Image (cartoon, rainbow, N blue to C red):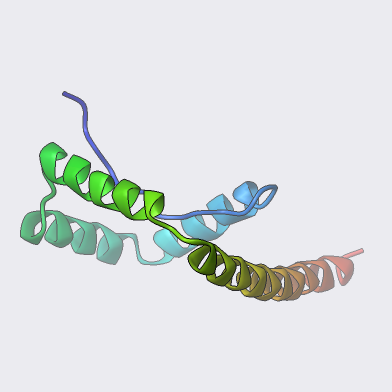
Length: 104
């Protein structure tokens, strides 16, 4: 059986490349610390394939029991999160474009 890993970063559509660069930059700055943290996490809290499937089953069952009220709340949360991400992305892009225009 292959290695089962967990997703470290989720990115919005069209933001994947920037998310990769951000992740690599953060990892690179403290690569030793990240490696040690990851190794410790895997040692202390290993997840078997069966546990992973069991957790997925729990979330699928919960998703199948969602009611209209739950979906409305999720919609509000997504809307707010998109607004926060949009503001964060604009700030990041302004920072990069501001530093790039000085060299022109």
